[in-house]
Image 1 (cartoon, rainbow, N blue to C red):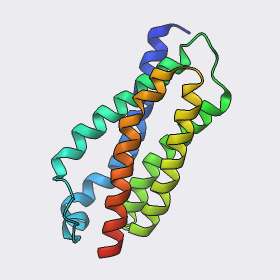
Image 2: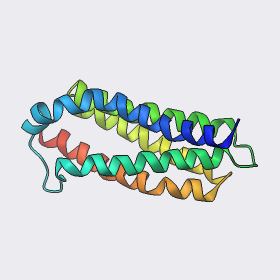
Image 3: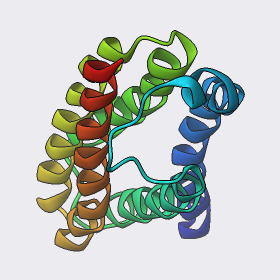
Image 4: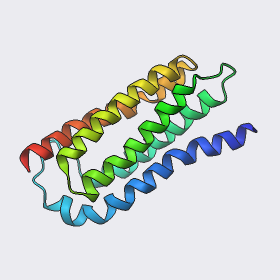
Length: 154
């Protein structure tokens, strides 16, 4: 497969997960989410879009680096990557769509585990690809703390 096709697919896949998540997120921000009591460290709503855009691009680049590397990645690298994308989209459906804050905690903890597993497998093929996921795991750690706080105070 041509390198440019791999690049496009690699970048598009995370944005498909984003789109699925946004189906539940966007309609609930001005209503349900706005009504929640927020912890002191809750960032303004406008920050989430730019941060997630960068993170989805980094995920796509990481996937491309692994997919196009001469060393073939173990199959589980792709299974873990796909699993974390599914969990990423699922979190929005559970937290925003179902308004289930504790369910969101369960999903986001699973997401963290699969991001770390993805990083471990990606590192076997490309250290740069694994490093590109560091901001993602950092943001999801922050999001986990925020999700737990929202669940506790609401």
